[in-house]
Length: 332
Image (cartoon, rainbow, N blue to C red; front, side, top):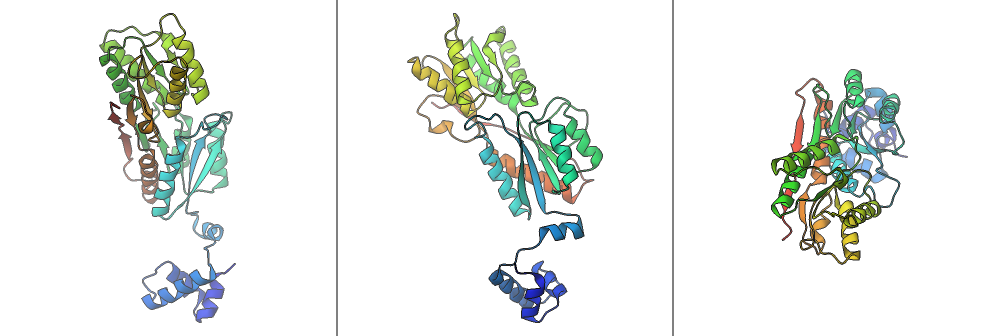
């Protein structure tokens, strides 16, 4: 593997000059910078990040902690545009992105502690926020730059980027009510997550405003894969008083619901009204009348990196927070 000494020897320059040229140092003549970079490209020089980390304490790496939703097929579909956005954002900021995947059985605090011990990243992106999430205080106490994808209910300032799930669920429920629905089913994801808690709050608010009592049997929570969504919705449709409206948690829950409707010969928009949140733009290509709240997850990923890089550069600066909205398409 080519190194600085080899480049320096070929150009009859000092190693220091070569190193500065590769960093576009203003003290190096532009023609020398061009010569050094040409040789570095030709010989395939790659900076030794480990060595640089030992010298500077910086790794030029950002790590995103992403828990697997389940071990089922396609359960993490929504993470693909999120990862794409984080990857592009990191690259534009001069960082590498690493993904630290955890299983549903892993303790989230222990996972973060392992990363802190490894010292393998300049900053962390944490996800799947819970009530009173202990990772926030841990990272603040350790003075580790981080940004959260989501919010927790701690009375403390910390950087986050979140999606307004409460407003999305409220708006979805109101739209279903306006369609004449009184029996509205609600899909939640993991019950202990703050995203599910605020989604439920939005649903309850809309139902209360319309004077419609809450039927707990219409509220489902869990890891809604296509299979589990289909089974849950099929049970609801088989009940004595089935739902006339459905607010889906995501596109996988939607696909499961549509599968069940097809098996029963029912049609969305005619026999039952559906509004879903869509993270992958998949729903807009389905031949069905479905209301869709689209969320640009690639933009979310890019914003997460932007906030984290700002935090790394200025740890004592203002704490940035962003609450992003979904865009509604009536699907008519």
